[in-house]
Amino acid sequence: MGNQTEWSERKIGQFQSAIIDWFKNEGRHDLPWRTTRDPYAVLVSELMLQQTQVATVLNRGFFENWLSKFPDVETLAAAEEDAILKAWEGLGYYNRARNLQKAAREIVTNHEGRFPTDLETILTLPGVGRYTAGAVYSCAFEKSAPVVDGNVVRIFSRIFGSTSPVDSTAGQKQMWNWAEELVPDQNAREFNSGLMELGQRICRKSNPNCEECPVRPHCSAKQNHMALDELPFKKNRQKIEVKTERVVFLRDGNRVFLTQESGKRRTGLWRLPEISFETAEKMTEIFRMKYGITKYRVDLQIFRGSDLEIANIIGDGQWVSVPEESDACAMAAPYRKALTRLVDNEFTEPDWELKA
Ligand code: SF4
Image: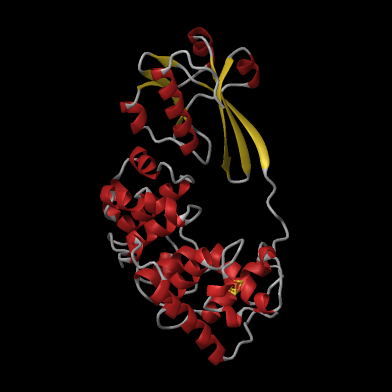
């Protein structure tokens, strides 16, 4: 397959109309980020929805909460980092929140607080790549620009029956060329939103609902009985690595001891203090849970030691009251869950035993 679809203009028109009509009739128009044309709000939603499910963002009110705290670029640009991390708590991948603030500062400093209206300038904003710029340009300004996200990659792979690896430069280039060729001059907002929503709801990773698919007549993979679960094809399936995190739970009355992370990904977030394997061996394990982050499957083991031991091993940290101060500390979701569970058990059942 070359870099073009090799479709006639008529066929391209039919494909565009099928997606646009499906979106107009079946799309979720009640989503809060679809009822606004404010480019800043659309940017917020796009960054939230990267790597986070629509249901998570929606059901827990992350989008509305963020806009009530930071309604415009000026407010966000002036906000403290603690406040933005706290508002992002539960969404993960905190660099998205930091990039959002950097973009807001860039707009305030270099664009007099006005969101840029041309695609090239939107692309220069921190944290904004080709997908995000295209999404903001088409959804907020209703102008024509291609978008390629995981949903679009899956649909295109199946529509064109492509077995070229999508995790290669050539494969990515192919996807963008198709997106460029197919995005209409008019109704790009409906087309792009429809394409992505079709990928979420109909052309799903497993068990695609081909019976209700509006572009089924155009789908090469379906017509040629290809194994849909194997598309998009990737040459490097990501391998999951297992790792262990050992931390200590230290309580003094209604206070717990927390430290702040300094790792690249979670800088500034609060957590239970990490301890070495040797130190953990001298302590009692009181709780264990597993969680996933990027390519890691983490076995989180929580220990309790005497105050004396702790004092010798923990460097910087802070005693915080529970729940008042601990609730105000931005914390990665697994640590929030573990802390809540530990505190509930500690405060209500002082002699509780190890629970996995
Ligand atoms: S027919 Fe099936 S596989 Fe093809 S695009 Fe539609 S849902 Fe996806």
